[in-house]
Image: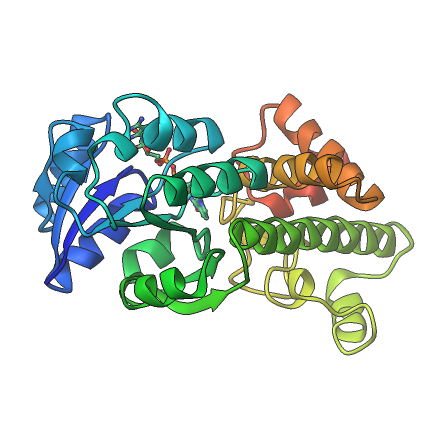
Length: 296
Ligand code: NAD
């Protein structure tokens, strides 16, 4: 039984904290929202009234927060985690944040005598609740090895991607590719339809030809060919366009910082920002299909 402090009990963190508690760990949970804390307590966590109560005396500290500014604030601001945690504590930030913030916070953690890794996830809210997330981790090998048993409670696949921040790099590069694939798949199905080729026939051909990709075969944006895809459920998310846009913006920020050419990543961000501007970014990210059809 390990003493764990958990910060950020939202859609993702709530399920993750409960899974750690169910595995027999003493999880002291904090969120700015008292309702979120109450829900975690129902699932077997202890309530913390503030950050200090969550992290004081904890051997392991896990966070699942919205963005880089929250992570910087929660860990590094005066009155943050670094001020209250015991020396040698292991910190695991599972939030999806910009690479520069992840690297800066981890570097400060190490300077202050802690261990820390970035460990963003894929798998969504269902994966967080079921303990089947995929973790992509960055940081020292020893810290990763220390974190692994806890990550294996919350997830099914756990990868070490290299040095600090590389978990975020893996996540945003994968999701940039996913966004590009999805838009390309939507364009192909839309053009096929306009030229008189129905979605099922095009799917049967392309899914066994060189255009095949995950967005087509597991998540087909044209209704019909893949029965459980969001396109058959009025494009209800799924993976919301807003979440894809967040990741594409992180990818673009990182590309600018690294002076990497990502022309299709740039276009993808622009296309998902049109969904945001239309107030439709709550739809699944495959709803780019509707944007191209003119029916968003
Ligand atoms: P969420 O908004 O539901 O939860 C974030 C929680 O953090 C909220 O409960 C909020 O009150 C809390 N919080 C914010 N600032 C705080 C502070 N200073 N102290 C304590 N608590 C604070 O978000 P989510 O959907 O759980 O996502 C969390 C992270 O996981 C994000 O970085 C997101 O990009 C990533 N992610 C989400 C999904 C998904 O499907 N939702 C999938 C993969 C990754």
